Image (cartoon, rainbow, N blue to C red; front, side):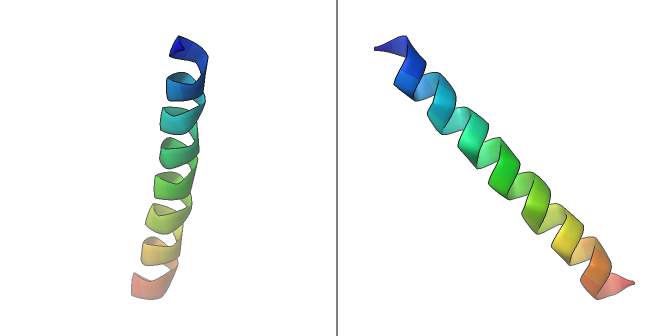
Length: 28
């Protein structure tokens, strides 16, 4: 029950990291 929640947060963190890099590329 804890593992799916952990993978869920990991997926969100990865997507957020990609969005942040895309935003920096857009500003640059």
